Image (cartoon, rainbow, N blue to C red):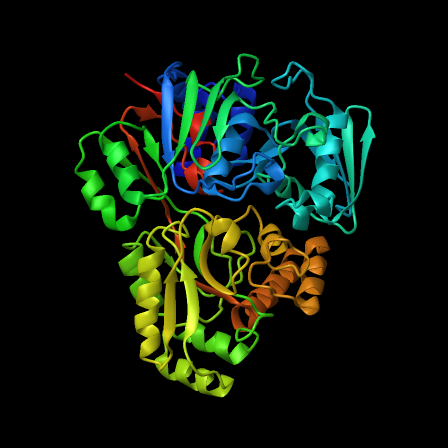
Length: 529
């Protein structure tokens, strides 16, 4: 409760929440009227954020292949870039993950959750001066349902049967009921663009707090404040510069010397060194992000489940968590859901390092010779070290893993989702349904383990429309077991998001939604002094 009330207090202090909205949320969270009033007064009296200054971020993840089309956003770099200039219909609350209004000011569902009506906010302008309309929203959503768009949100959008206007409202009719739909629409690819981006998806014209002024793929993106922003609780600095820094050592040096104000993807092994810098603060946030080793289930030799099981049992997760993450995270269990998700499937036995079981399944698979694993330092902090640790633990089971270190530039276009065995990461999603729909549904573009199971798809679709939470939880457990025991995912650890900033960066919001304050870091913080 203290984290949530501190969050509410912070929203008031930054001008991001009216008294009426604050009181409603605080009392819904269990506070008495007196306690809520006291908390509101404390928040209102807190220091106001300062406006002005030039914010510089040094981020890992940029690539020469980066596209400005939101449908094709892949990396952490573009995730943050998109949050600067664009808005979605719905956002998620940082500490609870609950859906909150954005360009949709309210919504309601039919009794079976198959028809949803979203009231579109009036008086919002795009960066080019054009006023946001219902037609822009409809065109955006329709573009992301088109397979030709290659949208990362396609797996989510395929459940929408019809998109129509009703006055100031957008009505979405689904193929089946889905109680999670508002949260699904928080997907960071679903940036609302003029005419849906159909005229020019690369224009980077949105309704966000900043206007893009320049863009060099993988190198740099710059922004200036949108003077006509429809919100007052963001966009405090005058301008932003996001610099691509894929080299971890370079990022740390840039932060320590004050060349940048904020860096992402801090290797936990360097935390103690950074903490000694007098001007640096470590920002660690628990969440849904996870580091993974992914096998293509439809590609030899990984089309053999015994080989996949052998490789799962050959991983020493506890040692990897300690060595690679320095304890900044939790052990994973080969399915992409942890306790932060609603209806988390409890009671699933934790898979442990077992060289004997690994050797048994390896022999049963009939495979001989080395197994090629591709990795890169951009896959996740410590990915190369993790691959070497894995190589060593697998040797005890008689499994020879050949580690190939790939260049960072182009890794996300040439290796991930292309090569049959590689390291990668996922930032998590707002709901179990969205996580599975994005990466495990047979038809999902980002099904990076090639997990093609009609029986899994059937359960996923049934769970989506199941309003009985107990039944739905059982379905999610069945899905987790299928992915864990028969899929191509090796998930050794859920990572904390470890970032760092200079101490004059204020207002940082720890957000369970995703890394870098759910991508909003540049729009939420301000500079002091």
